Length: 187
Image (cartoon, rainbow, N blue to C red):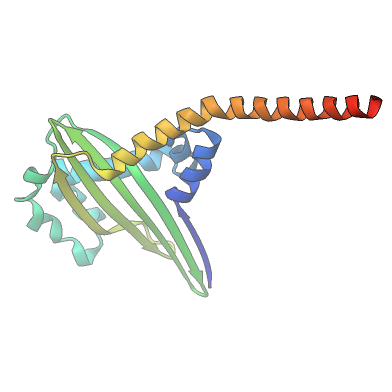
C-alpha cells in the first residue's frame, strides 16, 4: 500500500522558512478554484444549509436539516468574511482502491462573532469528493486557526527582513575569514 500525506503544518513550516505568505503557501497546495469551492460550501452551510445536502455523503445527508435550528446561533450572519484557515489532504492507494481525503477549516468573521466550519471530504476511486463529516462552531473569541495565520504572517515578515540580513552577515563573515587567512599566509 502506498500512502501520501501532506499537512499544512509541514508545508507551512517550510514556506515560513522561505518567508512566503500564508496565502501564497496555500495557493501552492490548493488551486484557487478549489479554495473558492471549499469556502462556498462552508458559507452555504451557514447561509443556506439545504443547498449543501447534495454534496454530503448519503449517510449524513439528513444531518443538515437537523442542524438548521441551531446554525443561526453558531454562524456569523450575512456579510461575513470567509477564509480558508487550514487544509490537509491524504491519498491512499492499494490494489483496486484509491482513497482521497481533504480536511479543511474555514473561518467566517462578522459582527463580533467567529464561526469555524470543519469539513472532511472523501472519495473512493474516481467518485466525486463528498462531505463525509462536518461541524460548525460559533465563538465570541478568535479561533486558534486565525491566531495561527497571524503568527505565521508575523514569522514570514520577520524571515523576509531577517533572512537577507542573516545572509549578508554570513557572507561578510566568510569574506573576513578568507581575507584574514590570506593575510596570515602573506605574512
